[in-house]
Length: 467
Ligand code: FAD
Ligand code: NAD
Image (cartoon, rainbow, N blue to C red; front, top):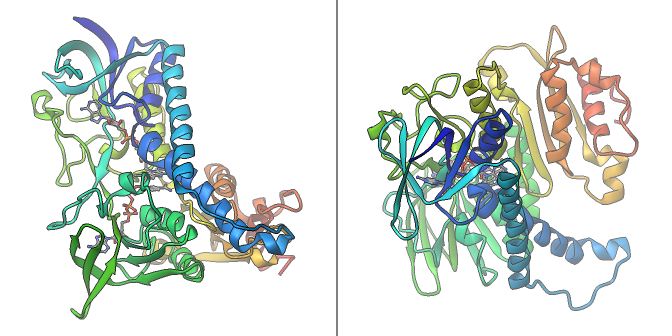
């Protein structure tokens, strides 16, 4: 039986990063993945393919709506969805191949097959031919990720009633796409098809879209997406979805119990994701899960069984690729006897609509609940020269700072390239910068990042210059 210092189960951004860090630290490392390609949800059916389609659809939308104003005339503009899907597949392949290359480079042993525990130190792997291989391991990192949640009584037929996985592979542009859930997946994939011409209706149970972010962001995003043609039914709970050969019928009710019926040709169910531990035989190793199926870990990401760790979507916390990767590094370094730390409060969240939405730190609602005395500074992109030049004037930067110390407590952005801009806020907050610190730093002109400086100036005694 082969034996390893560390065995990582699952090759997503949690698992493959953990494997690389383990190898860097000198451990003999195995990475087990049940699919033939590495990269997990993120690279195969998540972050990367969705961003590839978002980019393609954004080009199309800009060509259709903005190019003539830029002085670019186009005739016979058409969206070629099969080509977009083909390009997306090529991007995914390149990215997954890149992970395989990194495994070779770092001398990580990749084993293809479904892993399960025989006991706390022996992992059994069932290959495609049902052949079982067993390996012995001193430490294990479980990084098996998550799968889409489903609603009770609603069957995903994968044809008309679909999850994000099928929505990344459609062979026609829906005429009317009904989306259950106004969260990240619903709005990103809804944007792809709305830009390509689909009517998109979002049915959301809560009274706001992207409700776990600062409320001001959902409000502004809803305004912009409504202009793009989205229809929103907030405070509506979906009660039934029935798929036919060519249509789908959705029923929902509002808080007063009033019912509505919507007819479309596709229904995307995007109501969250659940941890994936199927057929892992956790009980044979004695590993415990909580009431939501998440593997329970301590602050070192160790499970109740010494030597077995768990990271990423399969444990508590935000279901984000970069959170999974940070945890992969942390678990590897803990195994190596180091003392790493993750500041969970400063893991940024991003929604890749256009305008993009990005957020880090406390929301205004959280500060109110915590009775923290804070001040705010905002700057709208319509006052930014860079944003006017690129016709990206929707949105704003909002900075929340401690009323007494001026320390930045939260930064919430909706606007062009917010996903990239938020990195400045993360750095500032990691170093516990005050709003005035950022306000006094030179930001290149003209850039979108000047809006962060201006919002910090606004938070510092209302000193914004350009508004
Ligand atoms: P996963 O990526 O889910 O990987 C787990 C791997 O484990 C899988 O490959 C699985 O096959 C394998 N596995 C499971 N069980 C076994 C077993 N028993 N044996 C062997 N292998 C096993 N996050 C972002 O930060 N940014 C984004 O832009 C973003 N976009 C997304 C878009 C979509 C449509 C979706 C669905 C998700 C998106 N996410 C995004 C979330 C992100 O994909 C996840 O947070 C991330 O993939 C979690 O990483 P992970 O390593 O924990 O698990
Ligand atoms: P989500 O939690 O973001 O949103 C789900 C939404 O569905 C919620 O707003 C919820 O109130 C609503 N909902 C639940 N039941 C409902 C019902 N019966 N009727 C109407 N609405 C209902 O989940 P998601 O969009 O499925 O995304 C799953 C995970 O994937 C998220 O945790 C997210 O972090 C991750 N993800 C991240 C990115 C990114 O970082 N850009 C992109 C996609 C996915």
